[in-house]
Amino acid sequence: MGRLVTQNEIINIVKEGQAKGKTFVVTNGCFDILHVGHVRYLEKTKSFADNLIVMLNSDKSVKAIKGESRPINNEKDRAEILNALSCVDYVVLFEENSPAKLLENIKPDVYTKGADYTLETLPERDIVLKNNIKVEFIEFVQGKSTTNVINKINEK
Image (cartoon, rainbow, N blue to C red; front, side):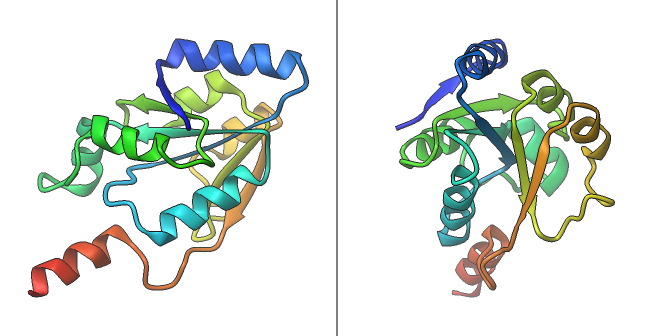
């Protein structure tokens, strides 16, 4: 079971862990209404390192990206649900629209994104290249998304 940590805590955890030979993989997202696509994505992400860190968009960040009607679940609830997954070791919140600054401060061994990105289109490209962070792109589960869940609920 994972735990919610501050940005300063996660930076120290990674530094100390890497000094002891542990590896860290990081991903990010809103994870608003958790579904099987999220679970498979996170399980695959965990397979790349000893520890999985989820950089979770804060409520403010989700609103800026997804609109005023989101998030459905608040940041504390989303963090608790993610931490209940056996594959998640740490969750850390970030306020910005992009995790770029936090990613650069954490300096994980691996960073994962959905396969809708390529290295060329990755917003954090410069950071991963500068810090020698390996990037893995993970295929989505077809038809599984928070937007699809919301749309299905609204059809009723």
